[in-house]
Image 1 (cartoon, rainbow, N blue to C red):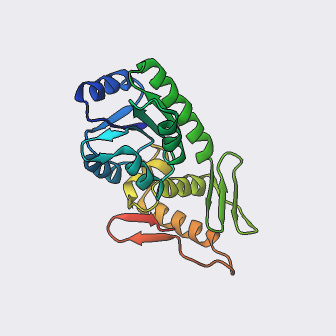
Image 2: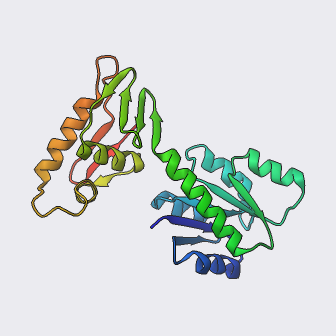
Image 3: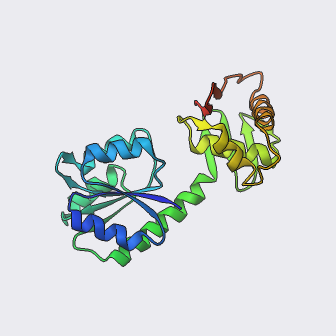
Length: 222
C-alpha cells in the first residue's frame, strides 16, 4: 500500500484527509515541519500533502528542503489564492496545489493522478552513468548494455528504491523471490548480489555501488 504523508497542523482536517484516504493508502500524520521531517526520514513516502502555513515554519521552505534530495510528489494545501502565491509554490517544486476549503474527492483524485505519474517515471532511473528502464527491461552502464536476469532486476529495483537505506537480507529475499522462500537460503542471496555487482561494473566505471552492511544486509550507496 502506498504511503501518504499528511502535513497539516489543523487536527480535524488532517484526520479528515486520513479518513478519506484510508481505504486506498497508508497515511502518516504530521502536525509540524519537524515531525514531518522525522517521519519522512524513517519511512518510504510515496506522496506528501503539505500545508503551506505550519506552526514551526513555512511549508514552502520545507518543500525547498525536500527538493534538495527527493522528487517525491508534493501537493500543497493553501488558503492563499493569490496568483503569485500559487506560482511561488509551483516554482518551489510543488507538483500541484489545492486552495482551502477544498473537496476531499478532488484531493483523492489528484493524489491518484500523481501516484500514477510517479509509477511511470519510477520505471526509468538514471544514476550517474547508469540508466535503468524497468518497463522495457533495458539496463545500461554508460554505453554498455547489461544483461540482467529477472532475479537480478528485482534485486536491483529493491536496492534502488531504498537507496541510502540499509535493506535487510530478509527483506531482499522476500522481495526478490516474492514469497516463494521456503527453499531459498541466504547463500542464494549472496550469490545473486555478487553476480549483480559484477554485471554493474565495467573497465571505465568500476565504482562499487552495492555495499555490504555486515549483520544486516545491503545498501545502494550512489
